[in-house]
Length: 260
Ligand code: SF4
Image 1 (spheres, helix red, strand yellow):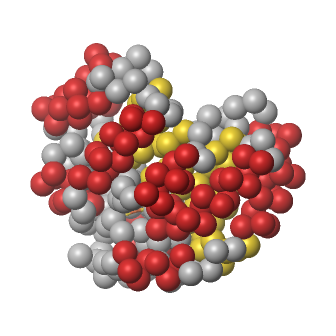
Image 2: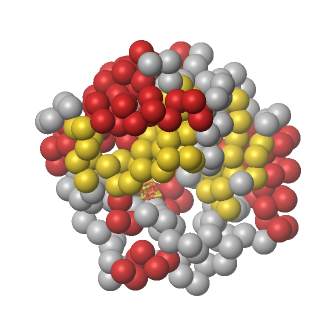
């Protein structure tokens, strides 16, 4: 393991100050994380340790920059005209659920301004305060990184149980969800598991879209900058054949599959 895992209690350090968020970075005109044009807030801190993480500098729960929630709301309001009918604000990471209570406040304030909210999460927690955050979330972008528990553990350092539980919870609320799948050769491209993943969610009514995100090497330099050994440095990007095969499997079960 290349960075120390910090437990939930440590991450709660971030929860003590209700008016500020700990963020990694901000994207003003994002088009990759949710519908339309969006302001994307990448928060700091994550408990997964995905082998392919493109932002290893976002993992440390004590890193990043502290920003006032009110300031972020003002910024979103200034940008509102650009959001159009579909756009809005997405919170991504790192892992947003580590700052769940403050994000509930943030999303509530955005809704008061008529701004759409998306949450991009790995589903690490399934607790009442996460459910409260989901109440203020228009679309949950849920990353389910592997359907097989052992492979998920190898790939992320964590179990997939809470991610699956959170998906089931979201389904029970009837509110929208997009599922995301990072396709990594040798790690998450096994046909039988892709099929199992798709079958698992096939009957979900709230899944509006499934996104396949092909693995790439663009984050490699960040690992080097942090003096960390990048475990997937020799892993190729998925071939056209693998991408097509995965797309075809998902398309048997879902109407709206998008290969990013
Ligand atoms: S969940 Fe996201 S931020 Fe966390 S380690 Fe995985 S890829 Fe990186």
